[in-house]
Image (cartoon, rainbow, N blue to C red; front, side, top):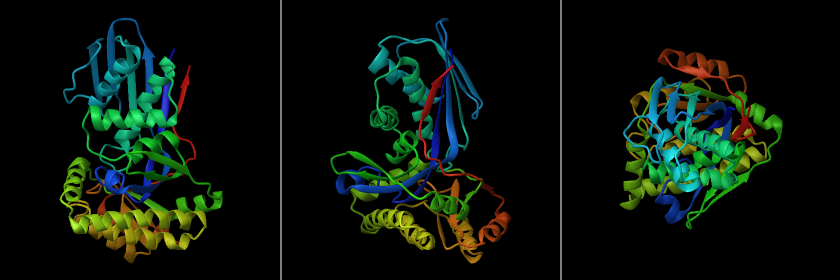
Length: 340
């Protein structure tokens, strides 16, 4: 028996950062995101030899451990271990023996929600194998708790829900620490045009998002006026983006992205840098009407809205920076699991 799963990565189109505590708990947050045809994959092969094998194919890390009720969190594939520990603690109450193989289509630190999406894929594979009684909200919340509470990894809440639900979603994060996922029904031609016009560009750099997020958290706690204003403006941006896409006013997308980018840079130090600013300005001069860096910032993927026939011009202009553009499509499905 082999159990498999896959969960989609996402583009955070608007509102990024407002899903991060304590801002979301104090003021409420709003995010608009959409999943794309890049995935995190997990495969579980049950065994009965008293061992646990973790094989991260993209990271080229391979570990064999003795099966135990709890595994030590020691810096080696801690996501895998943390998920296993929670599954045993909450559900099986006894050690398991298996081989777990994972792969992600984008590198860590890319800004597409890779870590959280991988957690969703692995939790989904365990849920499929063990027939765990979890709905979409339950699974996304469990993935969030493992990453943010059990492993104390800094970050927000949108990625786990995006990977689980899939599609285009307007997410609301209430002061009562609740998450509401509102799926948007958007005409197919609007999504096709959006995918055509949004150029996804990898800067060939990575970043430690937790440092930026920790700075953002400190700014909120210190009531930093500039940072707080930026977060409130990004909440407004999420609503603006939702209305523009639903109504097919795609010519406004670039301006809305540019509006958000100006405020996103005020969230914390490190969101942008001279290299990222130069890439952004080059894209604008070449025909893009707006864009942003994906995720917390500092590196990874950027994307730019290139209306009309400006896509090729922007891609050509970005070529001098040594990065790569990535083809993708928007997807309507979230986490998928199956057994063979």
